[in-house]
Image (cartoon, rainbow, N blue to C red; front, top):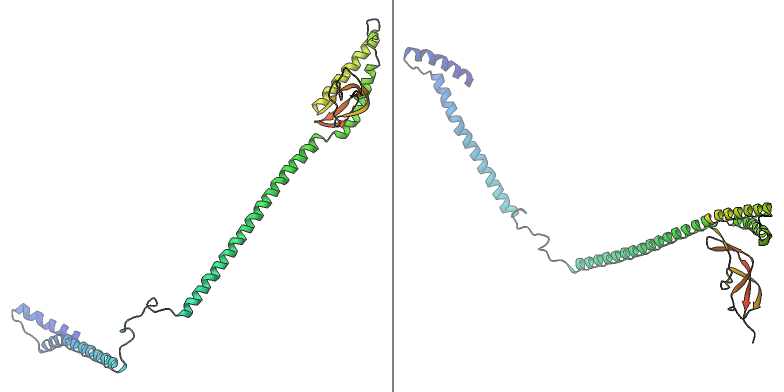
Length: 255
């Protein structure tokens, strides 16, 4: 309705302006007055409700006392702890200390076990390496023991040919001897490359770990305990004696 009044007033206002005379319609004047009065009326109503609300809240405060929000807040830190709370806190601290001590003891125990296991593992590795080396070095021990018999036979064959028979007149015997000697040398060199060596203890001191004493003879011109005769040579595989040499030893002089 207010909008229609404004539009109608505007229609009447436009021809009046064109004619030079401003005529105001009573409807327009009434509408403008209502538009000016409406805001003031609204302001009065807002003030009334605000005043009423304020007065209502103040009356409630008088009846019920101040609200909790109006009272001064008391923080938890300002409140004094009771002896029971202090005892409980002390018990909790003691429990935590015991727990920490137990955990530290378990950690030391686990560390000790780990160090022992690591040491055992290193010892096992070293022992395994030694056993592997021993197995590799002495894998042909049985074969070497059987092979030394062939070396002994070659040695016997060479010793069966006396030196005075090795002349140009006995050319065939000389060739046979030289062939056997070369075969023995090649065989000994091959065995040496694989760790098997021939041991000739002539003139050495008697060693029960390497020599087997067959007989003893007192000899005044030689030191007692010296090997002066070798009946059978010995053999050693990578430093280990696989066959002891059979020898004659000089005995101590009897007074």
